[in-house]
Length: 164
Image (cartoon, rainbow, N blue to C red; front, side):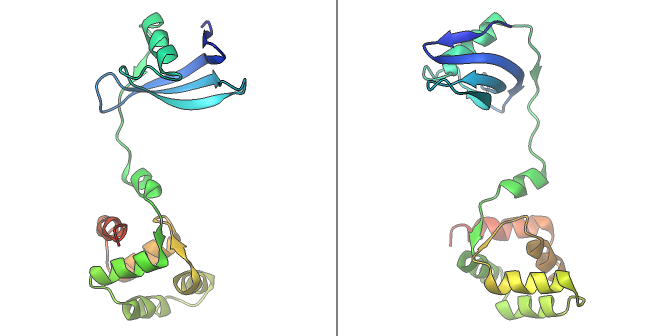
């Protein structure tokens, strides 16, 4: 495939193109050279109405390569969604639990009931000293399981806590 350039900006290669939920909008896995002359692999979101940056080059590439296979849209898995959830501050995390009817004392009880060992010690340290919490932190599933919460219920609590 020939390189397509616009000034210093160039679309050197396209590795894959994926459809999105929006008609005519595609995600390119590609190799580019930026305006500073740096070349690297990148992910680019092509929108047909965007006339800036790499977008005109991507649009021209699509027009020049109509037979290139476009991969169908695949929705993210629940695990991928969880991994992309914004972190919570310790305050947000604890207030989110309170809003869900779970007191810090209940979390303490659940953690203290864990079998002795490094996993328990790690969970206690995280609960007491962490300043931020990521949705995929093992403490979250440990506490959730101990409190009888499903992953979906934890997701709802997490999302609500983001606004605290």
